[in-house]
Length: 93
Image (cartoon, rainbow, N blue to C red; front, side, top):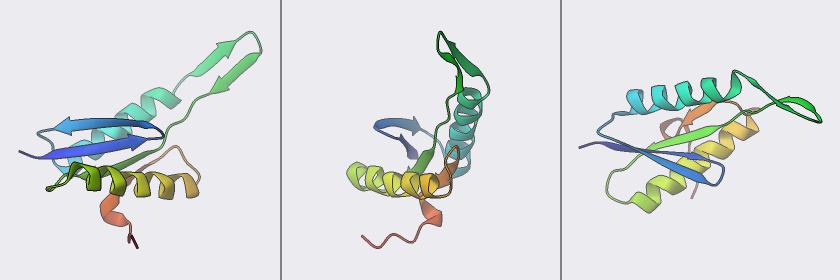
């Protein structure tokens, strides 16, 4: 069984029985759906965006969450509203 974790700010989602490509596809679909529409309030409209870091769980769930979090902040440093796989990050921790 494969398990991937996606981290978005202070939230975490688990995608069981997925490989990396599937997990990235799910995260990208969620990102696109969230950012596709303006939110209308009495103070005007605004757009919500989301950035995901995605990492596979090998043996240690906490390590996967940490790696996904590193990828999340890399995505934020790239300007946000993106999905970054942890496999693309050279983690120094």
